[in-house]
Length: 128
Image (cartoon, rainbow, N blue to C red; front, side, top):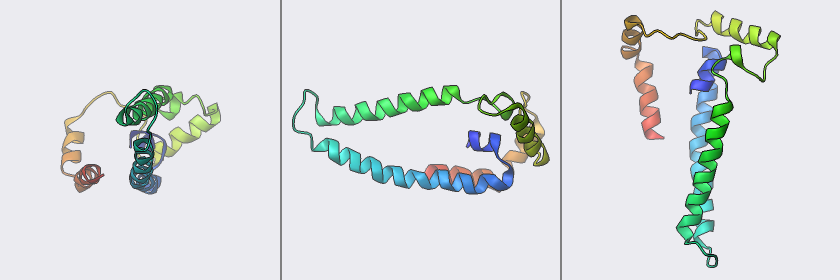
């Protein structure tokens, strides 16, 4: 959610978030199939469940490394040219999304707490 909101306008975010959350179901299906496959291993020095945890841990580790390479905002995006960075920042400015803010303002906290979308996203996250 953070990456999508950092690089896309508000109109573009909804579809991308929907695709991201729909992926949870697909990965549950794929993960179940992989777990079933690992459960069929009869040889090897490890128990069946250990193979599952090695795969899950390895994928989590690789995802963590990938997250470390992601820039904080389009301003510092190493994969964008200087012109593309300017365009990305301008797109976010038009949508009043902002690029970076290090101050927490109580007016923003109040706005977030009174916004129904916050609770809808929380329900979506809890249901996933």
